Length: 112
Image (cartoon, rainbow, N blue to C red; front, side):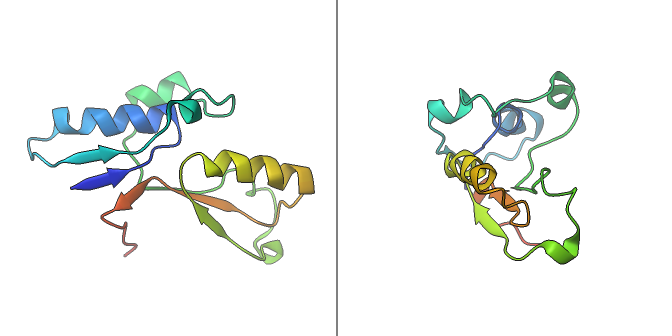
């Protein structure tokens, strides 16, 4: 079984495309409100739909300009709360706090 909460349209596309590409049947539970897919910042490039695959964890692409020495805290979140935290981080100008998105909740992604 997989429990997922995709945060971008391309993640949702690859998540739904996965059972068609692989013959192993697994139950899929998707917990995504439609409002998060209509969010102005939840956008994907057209090239991402044809290339790539579902990613269980998405790193923060906005804090890459800051040095690793300035990072004080990493926040791991999922779903719609990511966009709320992103707006709050911009309001506080807290670029030293990266936001990691956990799009697959179960099974928990393991890093080898």
